[in-house]
Each structure stands twice: as structure tokens, then as C-alpha cells.
Length: 140
Image (cartoon, rainbow, N blue to C red; front, side, top):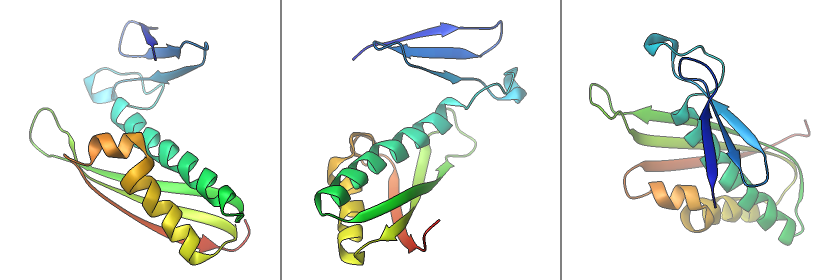
């Protein structure tokens, strides 16, 4: 796996491109001179964790023949205050799943993803307190 990062302005706006030519942008916070043109790197880490685990959950529910219509994840990260680097100390994910879903199968899919399958959460689990919850909601 390879990523090429390039600076695309004279401040902190950057573009990362993968081997397939797909890209994502990041920027620094305005308080350090960023242009507020893209998400921050730490926000991207939260999005990466949510994306990684959501892929697992979709695959697991599909394998169990669950009728998942839609999924959203709200992720909140708490960072250490007053220290550099200001790393995440806690991350909480709230999975909102829509469809005709068995609660036990849904809970199992979420748990397996975070505790065993998601590469991002596995990398973070030794240094970050990771918690999660899920809700099965009416059709969106």
C-alpha cells in the first residue's frame, strides 16, 4: 500500500493520492494558519475508523441475510488536553442502522468489527479507550 501526499497551497492544504489515483484532502486548523479547506488529519482518523468498521458491519450483516437499508455512524473523539502531541484518549462510535434487523445479529456484527476485525480500531485499542453503541431505527 502506498500513498503520495502533496502540498496544494502555501499553507497546510494537502492532497493524498493512492495507487488507484483516488484522493482525499486534509488541511490544518485556521488557528495555525490552515485555510479550513478540508478535514483535519485527526478528524480523518475518526472517519477512517468509522469507515473501516462500517465495511465490516455491512459484510457481516449481509452474510447473515439481514436487510440493512442504511447506516450512519456518529464518532466522537476526546483528545488529551494541554500536551503535545494531543492524542486521542477516548473514541465513541454510535452506529445508527436502518432496516429489518435482528438485534442480536446487529450487536454481534458491531462487536466483532470493533473488537476483532477493524484494522484501524485494532491499531488504536492499546492506547485509546474505544466504546460503541448501536441503534436500530425506522426506515430513513
